[in-house]
Image (tube, rainbow, N blue to C red):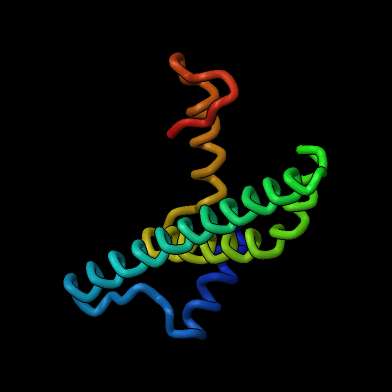
Length: 127
């Protein structure tokens, strides 16, 4: 993850896509804009899932068993979902780099926190 964050930092600088830091208003505006772009990418994941489920239902209606239909749909939409996930990671790393957050350390710390919760639901990841 550290290598990914470093790559993203350099790539975003090369593309002139960093969060602006000229002054408070530019920084605030840049952070909000990037947050909106991140939420757009998350919505695009949902759109790809919707397409995959619709494709699954079409295959089921054409006589394929549910599991086979879903596996076929997963194969068909894997690349697009991967691209949308990558877009999300790009924005998440941008925020992490701006706030000087080590995503790898934060991830493992958060997972340990969740593991040790007293009120956790079994089999469900909650924030």
